[in-house]
Image (cartoon, rainbow, N blue to C red; front, side):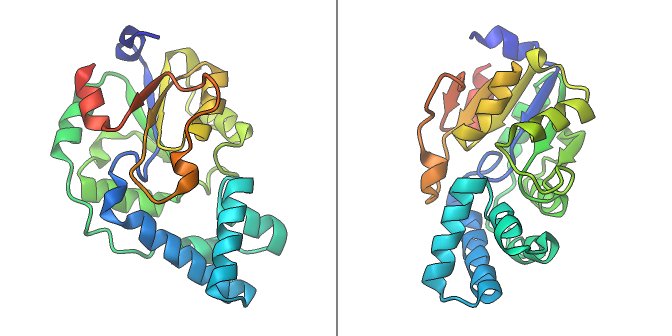
Length: 221
């Protein structure tokens, strides 16, 4: 696939965490620890067992939260409020990415397994909120996370997206597979994070472009 299709895209769909900012700023680590602490208290287990459950459910269900809802009837709202109660001051504003996004034609959407409140805080901190027409979050998806295919179908229907003229940008390669099957162009932002699953190389041909630096890649277009 050449870059010409990207330049003509009508819709850009961006993931949020570890995609629009680099994971070295420690937000993933904060969220990771708050997930573990919530599970330890909810399940009445020690930290090691909570961490094992956390990672097992993330791998099996797409999010730890989904696994907890299915297997333990957990209410997702207190969980989301707890894990996103983090200090985002370590994220610097992103004026270079702001400029790069300004040069993109087409509307821009956020598609995240987090909630809108978290997305709004992060986008405001980055100075990027004005670029995005909407946030499609885990609550609007009825708590069904990426990469479940029905969530992508819902996204496409809700925002009247033509997949053949859309691009999805994401830090977890497996989350791009349903988008590719719908006909979207896909961009994997290889993450800087301690998340082993996030770092897994894509198995298949569902990734069209790979970059370690989203801003530089956008500028190269």
